[in-house]
Length: 75
Image 1 (cartoon, one colour):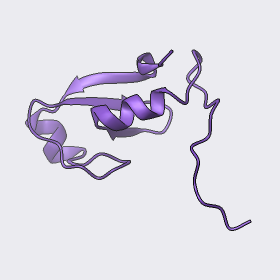
Image 2 (cartoon, rainbow, N blue to C red):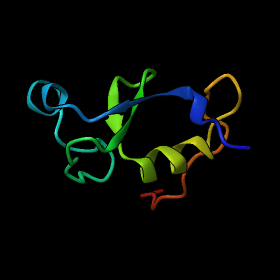
Image 3 (cartoon, rainbow, N blue to C red):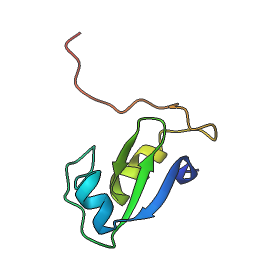
């Protein structure tokens, strides 16, 4: 089950693109006008559709991380 309800879906308006963010906080993809954006209220950032879906797979119904992404570690 995905938790896309943990994000607020918005449309990329000229005001958002100019005053808030033009880029996804995870992959740095540049947003296009009228593109769907997903606002992550827990981390105060905008995500693209692909990153929001990937993040939602790691969240439970309370929007808390239950599955850490695999990443290289120094230890």
